[in-house]
Length: 315
Image (tube, rainbow, N blue to C red; front, side, top):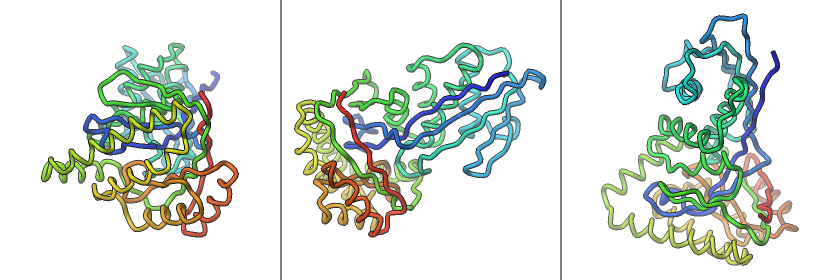
């Protein structure tokens, strides 16, 4: 039997993380330089339900039977089976690899889910459409992120820049003028669920203050959309800096993030901020294309364990 493969990109949030969980807009873009890949090999000789998982990047080799139902790998297959109304799950081996940093704010979990959903459904001859893939990936996100916004599964499924408001129809973003980002990894893993939970607790303790922070973050995202669609990307840098100040007040920055943000700004970045849940993971810096390599080297010298230069192309 042939093997079926699919992949999905990483992502970064340009504006609006955390506020997006509370109904404010956010902007996210795919990062095509890093990807999760799933290869499904059907084994018709084995009995139904024998699904083997191989994830060599994290040293995992197990089976569906040996995983709890709420494990992300198990959940994605079980949810796909329900959605596809399968009477039984065909025996198969699913190999997952990924170059997306784990717990770094780049959507590694959602990308793995999307890749598996596409490869698994293709192996059965009934590929799920984008809307189904995004919804199922979101349901898996609910298990291990608690109260996800839905932005990760959306931008990763569609692999396009998106303007996202929770509960509303997806809006893809028209990019009039390309712009470059340097993504720098602190090397500090920061599980999204715990940071989101802490922000929620802080919001409950002082809703008035946090709603003001969320409102302003949403306003920045809305203004940034206008600038991107007008081709005024030079205006994005100061917005990133202001968004970072808001995230700092939300309590989700960290010394490692602040150090890289300062290094980026000092080396000529037009603006810089954390991206994702915070307290670790990655920063993003808006840079002129011709300066991207130099800024990346400066960030590595400043302690970044890995950098990625990416261009957000015209759409």
